[in-house]
Length: 272
Image 1: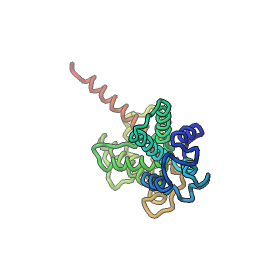
Image 2: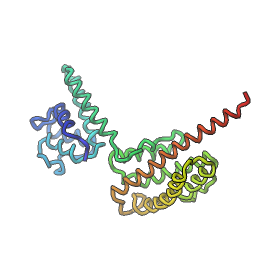
Image 3: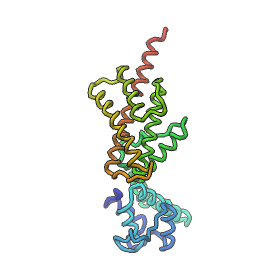
Image 4: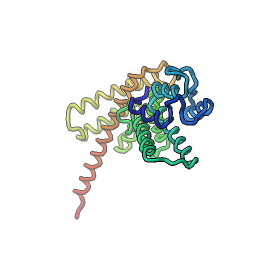
């Protein structure tokens, strides 16, 4: 279900000219083809008849049932179509139309940015590692489409590569046959021994996380699409994703602090 609210609907229905049951100048067939080409979804499926069978009612049902990602993508495509029709027919676009168009673009942008994962931005590309980049892009795409179950196994792979990269940075020795939690445990030991943690509580949280990542190995192998498994339920997948992304966020902040500290020591050692 998308986060389209009543005010959003008023604006969108106005610009898409839906008051009489139509959507812009689409016929039934062109409307169907447009949405299928945009999202590979058949708007004339009975799933979109809750509010009625007119084009406008099918679109209203689509807004109600589909994810923020799909609603944003379709609305943006319709807004592009609206603008192209206006420009190609040399029709005057007055200030009210410009305002409405901008407001509807803002709705789509808000929906696109809305995600069930708190720190999704930490899943990002590393230009030096193409596999890492593909993993990050794939995970973000699944989350934006509100399909976290598709990315659960890839999140595990991403985290393995992320933790190994931290160990490489600090010359922490590990074997590629070692499990995620074992390698992470070596990293936690390193930051504790080098006094990068200021509180006992943080130290305990990080050590407890070793056991959480051990459990993540089991989820990846037995509750994800990595194999022919019964997939974990949506709520628990979100809990896992948020735990992992919050942990990555903390580690990245910690690493930035370590870098600044090392740079300060180097400056102190400078002879001039």
